[in-house]
Structure formats: C-alpha cells, structure tokens
Amino acid sequence: MSFADPQLIRLQKYLADRGLASRRAAEAWIADGQVSVNGVPARLGQSVNPQTDVITIRGRPVPPDATPRLTLVMNKPRGFLCTNHDPLHADNDTVFALLPRQYRKFRLFCAGRLDKDSEGLLLLSNDGELVQQLTHPSGGIIKRYQVTVHRDFNPALIPKLMHGVVSEGEHLRAVKVILARSGPKSARRMEIHLDQGHKREIRRLLEMFGYFVERLRRVQIGKFVLRQLAPGQVRPLTAKEKALLFA
Image (cartoon, rainbow, N blue to C red):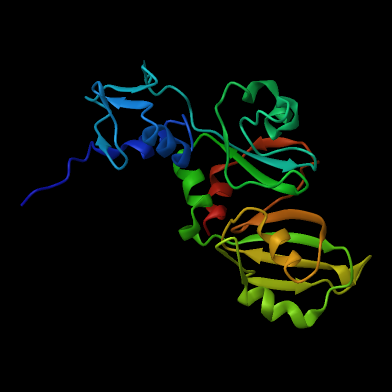
C-alpha cells in the first residue's frame, strides 16, 4: 500500500496560497512556461514539495513565506474596476487605489468581481484558497444583490429568470428573485440571488428579457451582510465573518 506524500501540494494551489496570484492566474503562468521546478518548466497539475523543491517564476525564486494572510471587506463605489492591472485604464480607476496605505504592500486579489458600474460588498484577499472557494462555480455560495431596472418589472418573468437562458455559451440564471413591496420605484426594484459568478450575469440575464440595470449593489455573500461601511471604506474581515461566508 502506498500513501501520498503529505508535503506535496499542487503547484498552482501553492502559488495561490502564497498570495502570489489567484489560482487561475497561477495556472496561466504555468501554461505560459513562466514557472519552473528544479530548473525544469512546470506543467499544469504538477505537485511540488515546498520544503525541498526550488520553484521559480520568470527565473526568480519564490521567496520564503513571510506574508501574513489578509482579507479585506470593502463597500465598493461605482466607477472603479475590480482588476489588478488594466492597460486601458489608469491605476487610480481600480478598487486598489481606494486602499489605505497600510494595505497597499499586500498583493491582493478580488474574491468575486463587481463590474465598474456596480457597487457594494467586495472582498480583497491574498488567501488563494479563500479566493478559489468564493469564485469557483462549484462553490454554490449564495450572493444577494439589490437591483433597480429602467422600467416596471413584469412579475410573470420571475420563473423565466430562475430557469435561465444561455448566452455566449453560459447558462445565466437566478436562484431567487424577490420583488420590492414598497418604497421609491418599488415596481422597478428587486433582490436577486446568484450561486455562480458569470461575468455581468445579472445585467446580461435581464437584458435578455428587455430590461436594463440602472443600479446593482451586492449586499451579502453566504451569511455575511455588508453593514456600517461607507462607499470606498475598507476594513479587515474577522475570522468569525470569514466563517459566515461559507455558512
């Protein structure tokens, strides 16, 4: 009988856990030949022993792990991109420009993006495993969004939103749709729950039925609810709050 070496870990997971990149980005580095193990170009799915293997990225050794894990919660305002680098936009157009100085030394990644015109709950982390759990389609973690569309919404369309549509090869669907019952523009407001994270999913889904989103705000991930943060503000996520994400 043989046993797996407990020191071995998938290379892309190791790089993500170190906060060097998201797991998807690490896989792209490996596929592009930018990562080597003991002087040999790495391959996707390869396992490594961080204690004995020499791992390099673009010829530079991966430094000893001295970076503490950090996850921040932000109330993202409209007008900012969830990207680490976009050559078409200035750095001050990204959510990272909003970070207080003490957090800018950390290499953080968005754990589930919001598009430029969307706002609300955003998590930034150098914990690759957490980012992977929150963003991978198999996670099934519910995210709640407050949505306002450009005209009165037809309630008869709710079953169709939940059944979903196929757009650009992706199945877009809502897990739940709750219509507003009172307040300004109540006939145009709703809460939509998702358990996956396709790009601009709510906007694309509603556009398939002739509705355009005027405002989209994420307010909850798992059982963690955004509270008491002004737009643009950020603070560390506590261990108790982290557990709520997966509750």
